[in-house]
Amino acid sequence: MSLSLSLLTREYPPHIYGGAGVHVGQLAKHLEPLCDLVDVQCMGQPRPGATAHAETFPPGANAALRVLGADVAMAAAVPAVDLVHSHTWYANLAGLLAGKFRSIPHVVTSHSLEPHRPWKAEQLGGGYNLSLWAERTAFLDAAAVIAVSAGMRRDVLASYGDLDPSRVHVVHNGVDTDEFQPDPTCDQLIQWGVDPDQPLVVFVGRVTRQKGLVHLVRAAQRFDPDTQLLLLAGAPDTPQIAAEFEQTLTHLSQTRAGVIWIERMVSRAALRQALTQATVFACPSIYEPLGIVNLEAMACQTAVVASAVGGIPEVVEDGQTGLLVPYDPDRADDPEWIDAFETAFAESVNRLTRDRESAQRMGRAGRQRCLDHFAWPQIARQTIAVYERAQAWFAGH
Picture (cartoon, rainbow, N blue to C red):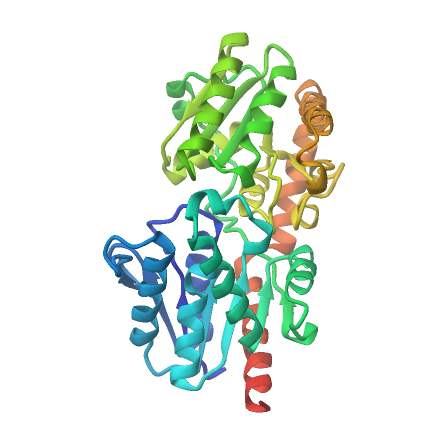
């Protein structure tokens, strides 16, 4: 089709820290053959393939205010295109402004929802109120909202009751099954101190409440003695979260061997190796709209044990590609219930580390599921279909 668009995002490869950055990088790549122009506006330092805008204005202001300053710069830099598509609250205001300024439709992708992440008030202070406002204002004005899972679509409509359900569409995240595929090597893991002959549980993610890392570390106290735990975890949201995690991890390391923490971002090759060699990939998130990292583990042919929240059950088929552990956000302040969740998580991990044949069978099924349902060319075509619907809605309003 004849279409030009601008993708607006805070993250863009190679400087990314979360799933949204992975998503936008892959989406841009796979939209290019289908469109006349795919312009990318991002934040941070300059990089190939995108126009970057520094988060420096107003100088010395709250981080959220500086993000909004970068939004204005992004909106001003959007060229003459047919449509703008923003990702996360960080870029939603830029999309709203660019859409108004250019008189073109604005599409937003909901990778997460600010009302579902109240712990961010610890990180942003008064800036959390700004992120809530920016997201809500953009969503209610958008020509279309893309939710990355059916669970996310339900959450969007519950959070923003004034939003017309016909404007909210589901397009799952995807995974690059060429980049993420089984890697038989284990030299990097051996350098980190992993014993390739013993069961291995791997976690990948930021040190944040959302990812539930503290729950995993506590659950690991109940892992079988020969099971190793490799944590590829960095970028804590706040000093308080970092201190809580480090205290819990220190206690675990004092009670068992085989606990390894790599607190830096590793290369994609090292990540692929870790995901492949894992007996189990662990995802204890307390909130997860979809979870690209689960797809990356599955594409590397590894079984997943995950909390059954958000869009995770749409990715991990319980008993087929992994095991799901129920989690109730409404009981997050109940110590007895949380202890039961951590115990159930540990039992699910032990079930697979004790039965390597079942874990391998689930891993093979997981890769096939990625190939069948989560390939990026398919995701790009579904996104184009949403653009067409957004243009039709915009023309009628």
